[in-house]
Image 1 (cartoon, rainbow, N blue to C red):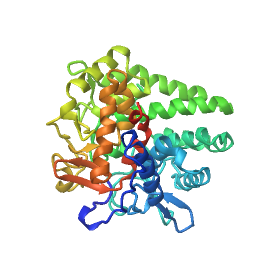
Image 2 (image 1 turned 90 degrees about the vertical axis):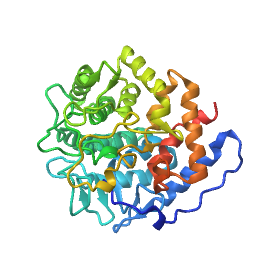
Image 3 (image 1 turned 30 degrees about the vertical axis):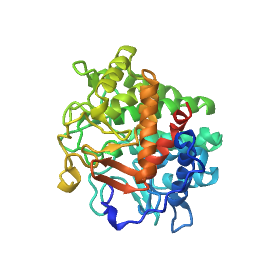
Length: 391
């Protein structure tokens, strides 16, 4: 959970005008993404430029998962030099036990759990390790720096080794001492086997295996074994009645819209399950989507358990992570949806561009509700699916 922001108290940088109104806002989206990536840069005390989560540099830290998304979704707009500097800055915050940081602030201090620096929600977040590994893999591949990957790969293994998993390979979160799981639901206390973080772990192991083969790392077979174990056992979270995956199988045993679509995108859903997930999403589209953006849960549902430290203002139904609509997952939802209905996938992109052009980029939205202006994960995710504007 990041610190609360009162929208009225912030003044966002004026939106960049599109060079033309053609191409369904494509030119505007490219210009706006560049503007926000520039606006989110903040110089650390050591002189390193950090990419923070919002385009007005309000969050004074480099977040691990957010930076992974920037590289994955819009790495062509970030220089190799700044990307590597951020990776090194992040790596310096790895804990002695292998835990990767949730974020590293501008003073160079690593923080391992969501929440305030003085009042963390838990000891750590379980997606720190996978997202750290994914960020480095994305950097190494995008900028062709396999020499650096070979150097840091043992540290990446220590980062994912730190994540507690069940014997079946899935990431496991004990109900009596839960840690934060996926950062975009970090206020939610999902327990038992957890879907989204298991999918991130699968992605990380798959990427690590591919790059480790190139540098001939001794860990490549172990990465493949872990990825295959998750793929074989992800069905433990399958709900055959709805045709979707549960977010977890203890607390918050609820349909996970973002996670089910990610399971398609990363290739762990069987063909039969892929068809059922897409059928569910299309059938329930009107309740899942607003202005092109997507909520975590089915319409009318809200999370069953939050961390005790979370104020009621952050868990109010229909707001933030408890029922608002986000563009962050469009990067995987649009390609997944396009497998069944390309026009509906394109409509998500068109509607989100229209909303952001008219009202400004937001972290999440709902009726008479917009949180965090110039939220960079929102615009970079949209940027990653910009080709649908041209088709």
